[in-house]
Length: 521
Image 1 (cartoon, one colour):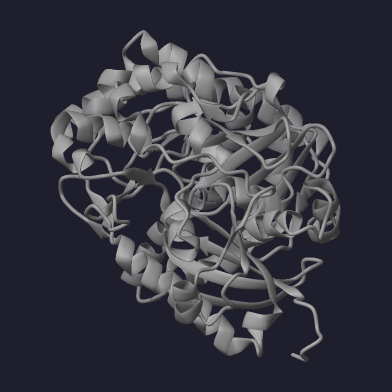
Image 2 (cartoon, rainbow, N blue to C red):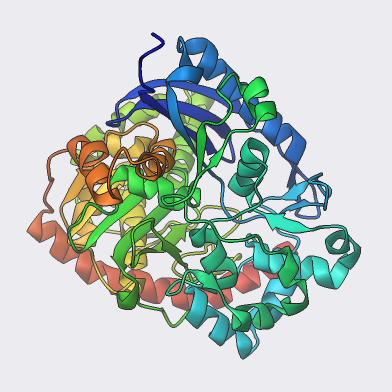
């Protein structure tokens, strides 16, 4: 890079549960480089899922250094850095900035009993009305409440309770802060984007308020990369660093959840299904079952309502895996993944909505739009005339109906659904989602949506764009594919089947409980 050249890149960090990525973008949003480091965490029979804070920073620095080695002059060319990461969980530090033990991840289940006790209180209704978020074991509020009840000495040693991205921001800048999204859905109010005393009271954590980090709006305020972090990462000291929102919001933003039109939504279809609908904060629909999330976007007065399925493509993986086992028995060794390319051809030979399948194949049950750890998958309506292809169609139908069920809990179908995730390469799955939800779908071709989301915030923070809307117009809109419209006749069949799907999941709850008792779990 020439001495008189201006910085022309933004680096986005996305510290996910599986992989930590560092991604370089041009100022107008073109991806020019990516490096990745596998994430590391440990699980235990007691439900624990823990991650070393020190190792997480080391792995993030490694990803950044690898990106520096990949792109000539990256340090001098970087105008800003944005950081996001896996949501929920509890990352504690002491007064000197040292970790207080390992982080409890969003996967950690040790707070289950505390969560159940808190969920049954009258105060929980007040908490839900403020946060718009159902209480579950993955959240920092439930985890801190559990620690306060069972190992208070751990909290006594701590000075700040971070989330993953907050810890990385602290390592990059030396500043202790959190963002409006995680602050409000955990301990605050999504309307004010501030902490709420009634929420802390409901969690029994008013006396631990000092653990909450100051809330920082990343599109308005940045802090410089420290000398120590610069030496470790290969970047330039003083580079502005932007604290992004939680990864779900950043990924949805990068994939097109909000592009200025009313009624847009985004579904990320992977092993799990994540469904986010953009709306003004005064339009939020709080469901009677008190589930899901309300997550602020880095746009004034704009939020996403969120519902998540524990299993989306896991259901197809399971059924294809069963077929692979049968074929292997007859001397035809294949894997379920080998059969994926045949999926669309098989589905074209079937008729939608012939059978009902409940897609709760995960051992963890379901969490959206209802919560039941004992929920399990089921086929309903099978007869001797049905074969494997019919069952495969039912599984795809079930995944599509689960999405429709989630959007119904958020107030109804969106006007347009943007799709991301590897599974949406399937035309038949896209068609099923469009018809079940009853809205046209568009696929976003953005590879690293989470890193792009926080990089977009950084672009606004340094003045490369005047606001998020103008940045979205350059970074997101051109990457949205053509609209694919639902088939009216198929939509009619799905809409007729959805009430049966909802009744079945409600009526089977006692059966799931009995099966769990029999299995002794």
